[in-house]
Length: 290
Image (cartoon, rainbow, N blue to C red; front, side, top):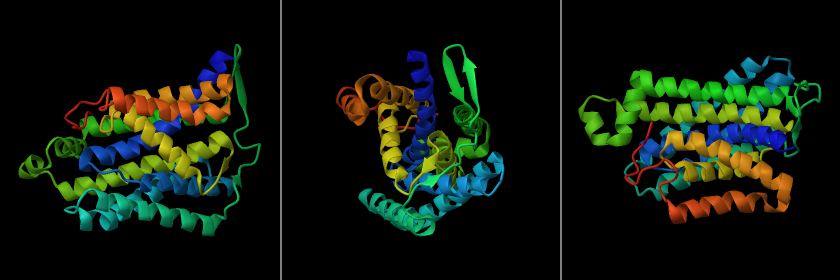
């Protein structure tokens, strides 16, 4: 029972991790919370799952979701951030909130407010490992999340874009003096953030077998909690906090009841803010740790 719930928690935590990384990338570079990430997550799920329901393979669904939400991420950056980059931080925050409302409204009008249900035969295989039963969808979710994190690590450590992103996170003005194309790197951060959220949207649909236009609100808030616990600008902290909160949530439901699920997750977030505001692996200066 305990091991089974651990597997379930790691699966859920993998989705939270990808969405939280989407928040953390923009937060680390620009110091703003891009609230549109939560609805990009939802839109990516709808795009990818709709293609899969039409008979397209999983990789096509994931790729289309990543491309679609990545492009939308650039649109958000150009419209919601660039014109307001010299305004107080609350201005781009509210602007991205406006985009999230627009995206949710569009999804409701295109796909309807009723849940998009996946057929039971879609990835219904299960594998028995001793006393642990692992579903095919769970394996896909965890494998895809690990793959996305590995790609992100390679990009951050071994590409010019990654070097530029880390330089801007440390000091934007110095990075520009050294020749880093700040506008291009900023757009790339929004695109990568949106792409990761879109892939996570497909994964959450596979995990639960359904998707609604309002799933972004709940998962987005959980992802923000993950980011806070791990460290608002620490990618490695997010990688630690995502599985931690996923397991905590599932264990709470299994042994304490669903009524306490959100209380424990957000309680841990509040406790972190009180005792270690920079998060588990964050640092007090607020610079990005990648």
